[in-house]
Length: 327
Ligand SMILES: Nc1ncnc2c1ncn2[C@@H]1O[C@H](COP(=O)(O)OP(=O)(O)OP(=O)(O)O)[C@@H](O)[C@H]1O
Ligand code: SF4
Ligand SMILES: [Mg+2]
Image (cartoon, protein in one colour):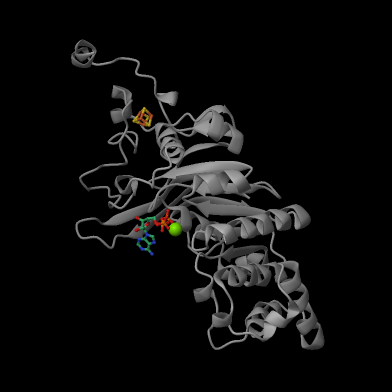
């Protein structure tokens, strides 16, 4: 999948703001069989980007090239043959299931809908899928409230696997689970990725989880990807001040600073004009004068290692005279 200059604007829910630019000029390639982590604070646009990649939202601008068509502009008819390929696993497993349906019936719905199987073969396939995710075929007879959160998330993964996807967007898929169960689900996702080569876009605000699971990490801030690289390079050689701040908070084992959450409206007319200059400049301790005038593009030594910053690594190049004297 090749994403080019993708932008998505919503009408704002806040007074005084006309639009929310939830995705702002995002370009990224997603290779077959890779696991890419989307990290960033609340409101940075992770879920919106994930859903847009799957054709659940129409883009305001840009392209999502997949199997020769542009998902960003495709109509429902052109999207239909690709629906099976592109699937999502959500954060809250309980809300993904109809409480009145037995697990087996819930799992059967997409298998019938996509004409994958029916009758006796359907029952056997549900059992096989449940066993594939570490449950037993007997779980098909249970109701959602009879399963634990971890078991339900396994069922949600099994249901998606049955459709034979090529790309799964998993949105905070382990964040509601106990820490002990979390590792099991992450290992399951790793095994599935290895066995069937499905690509995963794994959305998380937890850098440790991303480090464990992902081959590459894209750091998002206010709708933009501000840094992109292999997991190793992000952890050993982060360039963007925002990435470095996230890593420092993680090292200090601090819960994230709510001040970092991107809760304010992104508006063309709002008090913080994020369309001029770098969108991180009001929080950046190493900004330089250029940051107020120009927007940094996502650039770097290679297509795979990019960052959007005029002062990578955050060197204090020109300390103000007053600061220099204070030292
Ligand atoms: N349907 C919508 N209508 C209007 N604004 C929306 C809509 N969906 C999301 N937004 C806004 O878009 C921005 C990005 O939201 P999004 O849910 O994608 O962030 P996120 O990174 O997934 O956050 P979280 O970590 O809290 O899940 C936010 O400002 C949010 O308020
Ligand atoms: S471009 Fe400037 S303001 Fe933006 S993160 Fe880099 S140094 Fe900070
Ligand atoms: Mg989200």
